[in-house]
Every structure is written in C-alpha cells, then in structure tokens.
Picture 1 (tube, helix red, strand yellow):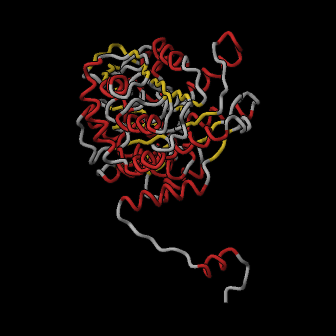
Picture 2: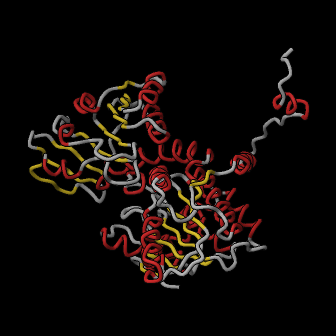
Length: 423
C-alpha cells in the first residue's frame, strides 16, 4: 500500500465522517454484508477515479470487504476531502493518490499512480482514468499494464458521452458499464443530489439570499431540472437557457422562464451552468452582467464558463474566500466566480447527500461484481444497467425507508403482457 495525500493526521476526522455517511447508506451496507463472506472480488484489482468524499469512502470499504485490492485517485482537482483520503490510506489500507487543490500536472500524476496497480477493473467519473488507460494500452508493454482487463464503469453524464463517442469512433478498447444511465442514479443523484448540493455550494461560498434573486440555469437536463426546482423552492425567479427545443419546452411548461443566454445575462443575479458542454457563458455574456453577478458551474469539467474570456473582460481580481474570486470588469461592474468554475457542489460544499449516493454506489458495486464475473468476456462497448438491478436497488431503498408498495397479481401480469380486449 502506498499513498500521496495532504496530511495523514486528518485520518481520525475522516473516519468519523465516513462512519456518518455509512449510517445513511443502508443499501450499500446491506450489499457489503451480503458479499462480505463470499468475497467475490478476492484477487480482483480495482482502480478508482472518483471524488474522494465520505460517501466514496463507504464504497471503498464495501469493495474491500468483498475482497478487492484497491488504488484510488480524485477525479477533480478541487473535490477531494483530505481527511477522507487520509482515512482511506491509514484505516482502510488503500493506495490513495489525492489532495484538494492539486495542479493539472499533479492531477494526472495521481491518475497514473493509481494505474500502477495494473487493474482488472476501473471505476471512473468523467472518463479521465479510462482515457489514460486507453493511452497506456495503445503503448503496449511499455506502459507496464499487463492485464487482464475485464472492464470499467462510468459514474457521470459527461464521461458516458465521451465513452460513447469513443465507441462510435471504434476507439473503445474495453467494456464500460454506464452507471450514470441507471434510473436509480440519474433520476436521483443528478436531480435531487446536484439540485440540493449545487445550491449548498453557492450558499456556503457567498451566503447570499436566493429568495427574490434571478437565477439563470443553463441546461435543463437531469441536473438542470434539479437545480431549477430547488432554486424555485427557495424563492428564486428561475430563468432557463437551452439549445434543445424539447428541453426548453419542458422548462416552460414546468413554470420557468426560458430565454437566450444573451438576454438572460442582462438580468441574472446568479448563473449556474449544467450542460456538459463548453463555452456556455462567454465574454460577450459576462460584459453585460450586472454588478455583483455570481457565476457557478454544476457540470463535470471547468469549461462551461469561459475562464479565458472572464480574464480578458477583467482589469483585476482578488480572492474573497477559499471558494470565491472577485473579478473587476472593464465595465466597472464586479462578478464573482465560485470554485474556479469547477463543480460547485464539491469545490465549495460536500457533494451529494449520502442518501442519494447510496443508490449510485450500489449500482457501482454491483457493476464491478458483474465485470469481475465476466472475466473479460464482454465486448468493448458501453453497456446499460439491467432494469432488474435498477428495480432491486429502488426496492431496497424503499424498504430502508419503511415504505411498502403494491405488487401485481398473476392475473394483472398476464393482462399487461397480453393483448386481450380491455372489456
């Protein structure tokens, strides 16, 4: 076991926080108890590249309990919780390479360090590890990877988009299970998790009152919907910008204003990007913003708000706190950027609540089990989560909440599966 972390003395604090998360993740804990005795991952090497949070700590504990040998790194330079990284290194005896605030060079060095485990399975969030693994595989024996490589998983929308593009181009070299596309992931993690935690990050960084503010949400996918709903619930006037006419129509019929970024930039108080695309807010938009406008990003990469354009529009900048930078514009107005334009819910807060990560990481764990059982027999393509697995996780979550639901009778099942007349 080896590690490169910020401060090992933070391990006790990290363990307490992981314990707290664990008490709110009953589905994942139940899976640990189920597979802890049989240890289906014994002899399996797993390299993970996920946000190093207390919830991730519970996933790592579960993988280890099932027998896996693990190396881990962060998937975002600002999302690592240093106390959790320390706890995983000291108490879980996991090879960890992650610290908050690393440079781009250090970030990729951490990924390459995690790859030295020569993993059978990769767990990724954003596809950076998967892409680096592909580069290494293309180098052949020089890379030090000897295999066998059974496959990988992908946690987030941006990563799945990248990997499907690789598959379409014929560049995908090993199978990937799209955990993000499970209903018990994107309909909960993305909507309820990001919806709450993105606003939590903005509030922690600025302590502004959202009630009465004009909040511009760029993108009305699962994340954008969650952010818009939560902002409206806090009394904000929500304005949605979109490029997809269907998504824009949904936003309008959900009761939100819909506008172009060109027009929204003139009236917005807070801007939250959630598109997964680059250059959503450009210099021409920033130059029109009112004094005190706040910029935040809820997408995976820090490309949605054009930082180069923001720099060009500015005459000076200064740090307000650890998460917020003030930019003085040529217009005389000031705008505030949170978390360097990176994931605001992790750069300025603690990420998703443990309760929603319970389902996301249950999907991760079961997908790793599936890849381990396949032993490399799956074709190199992107796979969806089985509907049955989604249903099982949802039912387990309901049961942990003390919720009962109805069951179809045999006669009802026959009716739904048949084509008899409805009389």
